[in-house]
Image (cartoon, protein in one colour):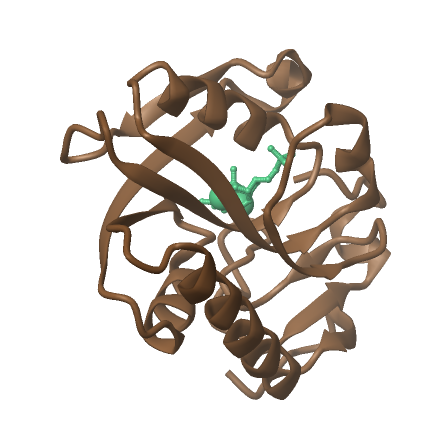
Amino acid sequence: AGDMGPALKEVLITAEQLSKRTEELAAQIDADYAGRELLLVGVLKGAVMVMADLARAMHLPVQMDWMAVSSYGSGTKSSGVVRILKDLDADISGRHVLIVEDIIDSGLTLSWLVGNLKSRDPASVAIAAMLRKPSSAQMDIEVAYTGFDVPDEFVVGYGLDYAERYRNLPFIGTLAPEVYGGNTSR
Ligand code: PRP
Ligand code: MN
Ligand code: MG
């Protein structure tokens, strides 16, 4: 993972910073959900690194489930129409659910997902996202646990891809604009 190639502009958040922040978030979540059973719902594929590290940093016993969702193509992404590629394995009615995401960019994915999960009658639904872009502020999404606010650049690594690449970088980096053509939305 060390060879970034010429496409990366800079390291935005180091592996050490990610790890430290993950410990802090895990401690908060442990405290907030003490005495309750928690189900972590990871959103494939971007959230795999956050899920793996956050779950291991926690002391509460948790369960994990996964969803894979996709917007209907870049042209209609702004409509917020999302399609389920892989649904949860289990029923979440009456359960405490924490959605685990790598990044909130426009906020469309999470705003749809929260609505979808709430319609299944869980005891609670909250969000943990390692990164948050400024554009998501327009969406009025309540994010209980945020790792870092990042600028409106194309960020990759620690699960985040550009055209399926860079997910396995252990840090968060920014792509050189000439690589992605200057459009920062995912
Ligand atoms: C990325 C990212 C978030 C979502 C955020 O997922 O992992 O899930 O986009 O964007 P939004 O706030 O504008 O909706 P993507 O759809 O690229 O799938 P991936 O996780 O498999 O990379
Ligand atoms: Mn994703
Ligand atoms: Mg992606």
